[in-house]
Image 1 (cartoon, helix red, strand yellow):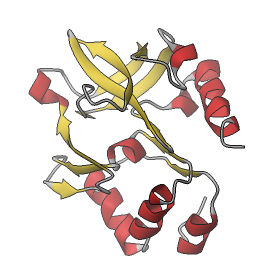
Image 2 (spheres, helix red, strand yellow):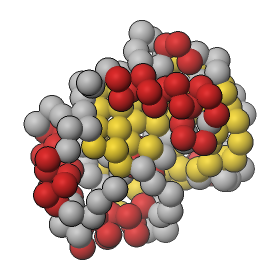
Image 3 (cartoon, helix red, strand yellow):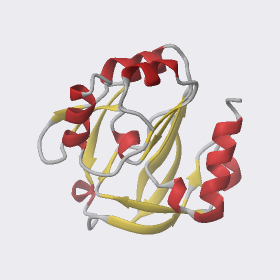
Length: 173
């Protein structure tokens, strides 16, 4: 756990967790001088895991509270679930529906804990899994190159969540 640029730069696996708001998180990362070290870590092919807000921050922008720029690793906007006529926030356990062969495959139809009011389209090629809410597919995880990120909280998802974290960490040892 760090707020220091040098620790981010020397990390083997960078985990960006998160709860809170997108604008406040980006502001804090900027104030601590961590935006470029995080982007460089990813650009240099080093393993990255984003969790919940850490997942959302990977995208170009969010409409949470205000239109706010993100890390822009992926050129997609984080949108309010109200656009899909889904009551917010989503809180609770939902089964992952895994789209293809990826690190989430062993967790297909297993339940994970979600708490969020914003989403990113699941139709992109790097979308690894999704959940269905009111007949809408909502991206629940991504995997592309050295990046794995989850909209859900594996650390709050019981044994399956801990097994997923172990699997992700072990694949980079």
